[in-house]
Amino acid sequence: MNSFGIRMLISPPKYVQGAGAVRQLGEHLSRLGENAVVLADKSVWGFVDEAVTRSSAAAGVKLTKVVFGGLCTQREIDRITALTREAGADVVVGIGGGTAIDTAKAVGHACGDISVVSTPTVASTDAPTSALSVIYTEEGAFERYSFFTRNPDLVLVDTALVAAAPSRFIVSGMGDALATWYEARVCVASSRTAMAGGLATEASLALARLCWETLMEYGPQARLAAEQHVVTPALEKITEANTLLSGLGFESCGLAAAHGIHNGLTVSPRVHGKMHGEKVNIGTLAQLVLEGSSTDELDTFLRFGHEVGLPTTLADIGLIDPDRAELLAIGRASTAEGETTHNMPFSVTPDTVADALVAADAYARAFAKKQA
Image 1 (tube, rainbow, N blue to C red):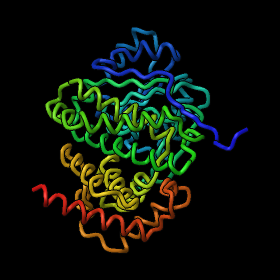
Image 2: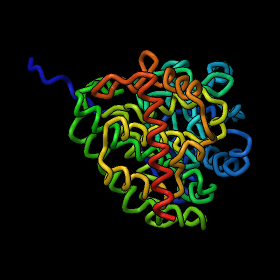
Image 3: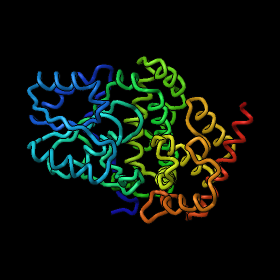
Image 4: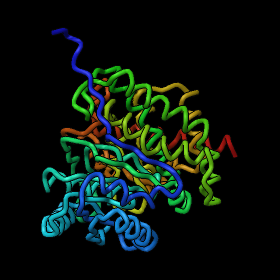
């Protein structure tokens, strides 16, 4: 046995993407089981109910529809797990954003050997492909990651629904996906064990890099398409980058300070109205400052953020004039035991996180003035 470590790449068995794909959901479900619990929040049910019901009926799949409460908490997981067991379901489907999908994955794990399907209606996170869920407290603060033994059996993305959503969702997804390469390269350089359970493969690192390249090339076009609610090749490419490339890249390469600082930011109630990728973008900028990244790299990052409309300053996510105590509270949460911030190749403390947030904010504000 050599000393180079075990390398792993994990992924869902099937990924389906395209305009109108939700109308094929029943056909795909029928290959996984006969009795499905489908969870989505009230607003999502308003526009997917007919397609989901009709396609499932045509495929002979029994449905139990559940209205999702809106946040992936242990209480919500337990509630839907009980309903799933009561229904005798052999498939659980999460439709909507990352929290609905994370809840479905957690329910599938709690119920044992049943199939799990991710059906995102927005391209706002890379949650759909992964074998983990982010669990929050009832107040909306990050609580923990919950890891599972396998990825979802199917990820099905309808890009017509992605295009129909407010453009803020796909832009937020770009913020989440943009972190993938920056975190992957750190974890690989430091030989960190990824969430897949081993060191990164060359394939997973290449996917993380491709994710970044796709964002840089097509992100601004995709934002404009999303604003007009139309499906274009650029929107298709960015949907894939946000969902598949980012998902495979982060899970099989690793997360670092960008997501750790995101988790730290959630301790401040002032950011709770912001989306995951919007907060991650602030974490990524702070990570780049922690790394001592070059001016060119910082400017490239900020220029992209301005082009697609991502937040780049603390004020942009609601942290207007934070005092040192608030920044240190964020720093403590960012560096809690087990946080991904510790995948950085050097020691990171609450003080260094607070300093990085201050420096990143100052640089972002100065950059914005130069661009004005």
